[in-house]
Every structure is written in C-alpha cells, then in structure tokens.
Amino acid sequence: MPRLLLFGPAREAAGVSSVTLPGHDVAAVISAAGAKFGPQFAHIVTISNIWLNGDAVEPDAPVGDDDEVAVIPPVSGG
Amino acid sequence: MPSPLSPLVVGTVTESARNAALLPSDGPNWIGVTADELPVDQAVKWATLPGCGGIVTFCGIVRDHSEGRPGVTHLEYEAYTEQVVPRLSAVAAAARAQWASIGRLVLLHRVGRLEVGEISVVVTASTPHRGEAFAAAQFCIDTLKHTVPIWKRETWAEGSDWSVCAGTTNADDIGTGDIGTGESTPDGISRVHQ
Picture 1 (cartoon, rainbow over the protein chains, first blue to last red):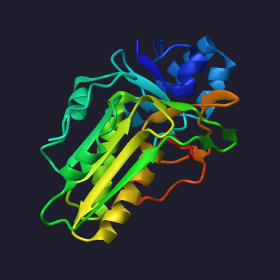
Picture 2 (picture 1 turned 90 degrees about the vertical axis):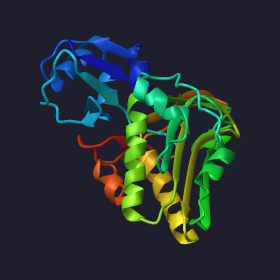
Picture 3 (picture 1 turned 60 degrees about the vertical axis):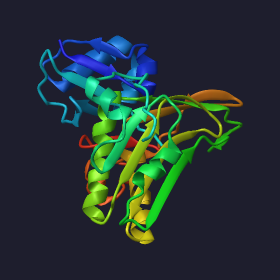
C-alpha cells in the first residue's frame, strides 16, 4: 500500500506522522485518511496541497505500493 | 572549513538529505537543514571569493511575538526533511538564473526547538557588486519561506499553535518570484506569512 506522510497541523490532527493506506490514486488515499483521522484532519486537507514522491500532483494521479503521498499544509519556514 | 552540520532529527531522513547537510558543497551552493546552531560566521567566510566585492547575509531570528500572539517563548520547526534540500536547491537555481553574477549562495535552515533570539535560517549571497547580493538574498529568503516544506509551531503566553495561514503559492513562484495571492493550487504548496 502507498505510504502517507503527514506534517505540522496535519500530523497533529492525525496523531501519526506516517501511515500506509489503500488506494489506487491520490484521491483515494487522501479519502481513506479522512475517514480514518476524522473531520479536523479532513479540514486541514482542504487547505493543504498533496505531493506524490516530492512533486505536487492532481488528485487523480495513480499511486502504487512504493509511492509516498504527503499532505503539505501551509508552510511557515523562515 | 565550516563545522559539519549534524544529521537531521525531524521528519523522514534520507541518506542524500543527511549528506547534503553535513558539509559545504564542493560546488557554489551550500544548502542544508540541521538541528544544530547555524554557522553564520562560517557561511560568510565560505561565501568570500576574490571576484565578489559584496556579501549579504540574512538571518531569520526567533521573535518574542507574532500577530495576535504576545510573549512568544519558543518555536518548534518541523520539516519534510527529504524534500527540504531539493526545494532549497530549486531556490538557489532560480536565484542564479536571475542573477548570473552570484558567486556563492548559502541556504541553511534549522529545525527542532528554538528559543527567542536564536537563528532559524541563514541566507548568504556573494556577488561582484552589492546590488545583486541584496536582491539575490531577498529573493532567496522570500522564495524559501513560500516554497520549502517547513512548519513552525509557536508557544506564547496564552497558548501554543501552528503559525497562522495566509494563503498559498504555486510552483511557478520559484521561477518568477511572483507570489500567489491566496488561491489553492495543486501545482504548489501553501504558505503563511510570519
């Protein structure tokens, strides 16, 4: 199963920084995460971007077992 | 030679990211992320070249307040470690595309807990003349803040929370320096204003 990485407020809302979830595309993985982690997490996803193996992608991007999906909330480095 | 930067402690650490943080590059860019104190003096020395008459260094400092949050005591930085060095490298490449005269560039970010007064980020640019050094350094810190996957959690007198969101940007920002105005896009990453 693809691996989902969570950072900052997304990690905090989910209570974990990494999880494997089923899904054949990015949208399915994110949907599974929303169902697993609840409405606060799902809200953060709405203001986040989604990366696949380090690159921003559309929700219909296909994912495989070795892929890494990441929820990228609004950044605040510096 | 600058002191080695220690390996990363927050987020997922890959061997490439670990190595990239250890020492200044043999090339013209020194890029890294570390939990250790940032080596500002070494950055300036490393950026010094015979053909460069100007060096500008920007240091981001942990401030004792932010908007609506008086009495900030400390910050905790968290990073998508594997992607920090690639994104910093993209910032450096974009700066060099815009200012071909840049001699050396330093882009270093700290993670973990930082107290008020500590340095969270260092940008140093050396160029033949001062104008390009000022412009390149400002471009680099502005673009870094909008495009590099790092998050900070603030603890202040009345609570603790993530830094406040103000909008998003997109991948084109790295190339143009044209900051987005708040619309979410799947092509980029979100940002906040400090």
